[in-house]
Each structure stands twice: as C-alpha cells, then as structure tokens.
Length: 207
Image 1 (cartoon, helix red, strand yellow):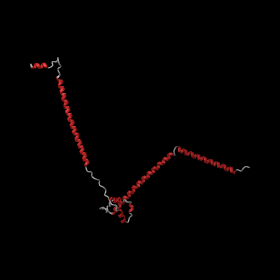
Image 2 (cartoon, one colour):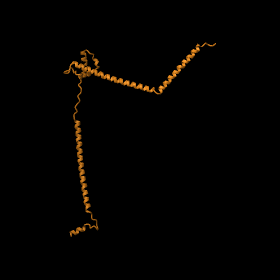
Image 3 (tube, rainbow, N blue to C red):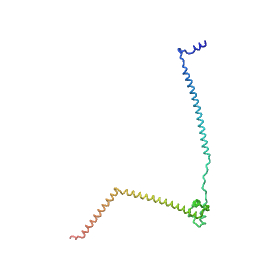
Image 4 (cartoon, rainbow, N blue to C red):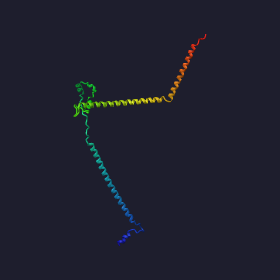
C-alpha cells in the first residue's frame, strides 16, 4: 500500500512533467564548482593582500634603515695660520710679494715635501729641483694658454680677411676695374688738354 501511495504521488508523465535526473545532477555539480571557485578566489586574494603588506613593510623598514645609517663626515682641510710675514721678515724678504697668499704658498711647499722640515731622505737640492720643476710646469702651461689664445686671434683675423675678400669678389671687382679705367681715361684727357694749352701759348698772338 505504501509503495502504491508513493507511486500515486509521483508524476506519471501524463498529468505532469517528470524532471530529468541528469540535469539535476549537472545543476548540483555546477553549484558546487561555483562555491569552490569563490572560496579559492577569496583565499588567493587574502594571500595576495598579506604578501603585499609584508613587502611594503619590508620596503619601509629598509628605507628607514637607510635613513638612519650614519654618514661619515668628510675630512676638512686643516686650517693653517699665515706666518708668511714673520718668515719673510726673518729672511729679509718683502712679504707683500705673496699678495696675501701665504697659506697657499705653505700648502704648495707641503706638497713639494716641506712641512717645516725636509722629509726623510730628501735634501735641500732635491727640494730646489722640485720647486724649479713646478715653476717650469706652471710657466709652460701659461705659455700654452697664451699660444692658444693667440692662435684663436689669428684664426679670427684669417676669417675676417676671407670675408673681406669674398665681399670684394664678383661685382665689387668689376666696379673697381671700371673705376680704374675711368681714371685712366680722365688722366689721358687731362694730358691732351695740357698739351693743347701749351701749343696755344707757344703760337704767336694775332693782332
């Protein structure tokens, strides 16, 4: 009886439509896949967010560490007292020759090996040789600079001459030649006129 009642309650295909079991299973599987995809996507997003936050935190920590890193100060040149006037007076030299550059002169002597005394293994002759060599180098460099400036001036004059020659070419040359020919004609006419006047003066006057 129970089986009969159950069969009576189920659709018979005539009075109502029987749903296909395959479609039901496909709909159920699609719902499960969508649920799994949403869950996986949310997990991936959470992982990405965590990774980005950690990387940003590491970058900020690295930047802060670089900012906090102490910077070693550059060594400043040692300030020296200008005692050139005292030394020059002791040697009987006019200290005005240094033009107030005694400290620079002291630095140059230090570079050449004199720091109040000669360095080990160096004699006064060696110091004099180094000084003369340095003076020669400075003079050579100054002469080279002077020659370069003179060469630049010569090149400028050469360009001016070339420009002047270009301006006098063509029509200018023709005009100058025409003026010269006109002057020659004028001179010859003056000579002829002078000769005629002399002939008239030599001829006897008519009564």
